[in-house]
Image (tube, one colour):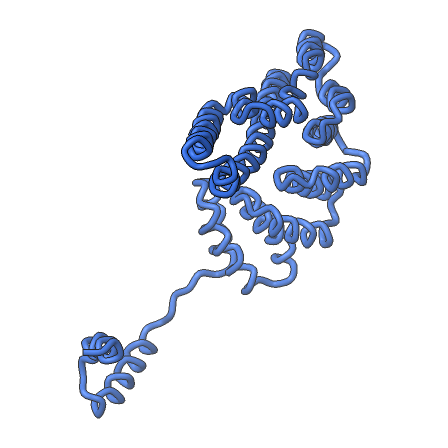
Length: 302
């Protein structure tokens, strides 16, 4: 039996009645269906249901319900639904889509405080999607905040953007702006962290590449990527040993022709791997330091 016949047989199993009776069946179903009132949710009920889903952390399903409510809502209701849809996309880590809906919400917002909050959320989207310059531009363009908490949020977002861009001087100033003058110990803690910020530059890219050129695998080990470092060292050693053996048994020319291309292939791969290991190590250290600073900021807000 060919594939087409198998597919046809699969569908035939679901045909309960012969074709001449199917029209009567459809008619009966339509009469039965429309003889009962159709109960459906209003947009308001759908929004309340979606709100409950958000409270439970089910952002994907909440998003579907908000969009459904949006389709059936009037223009006034759609204005605040833009914000709700954007928040769902944000928490679902769909930052580029969230930016689009935050922009829509901003275009219809007539509340200054809400507009600042929406712009702040846009800056968070830029930060998490690693568009730090856009985040800074968004924060700089904000009007004067209406209260102290908003200013602290702006300063903190700006500090994180500066830190990610490795502008540590402005990052330090922005972090300290969020700390109250009545908390000198917290401000001193931030200063202590930034005094050691130069350590984030290690391992340097030049050191990693130089060591990898001289001794394959050493660049990864400097970056504490011991698994890939040992792997690179072992593989290079095996290829070199194979090349020496071929040269002794046959000739150096044979070793160059047969083994050297393989050695260069893995040698270049080792250099690329060492760069990746160094970048990962640097990112790990930056995240660790940033989390230490954010822990201090959390103490300020308690």
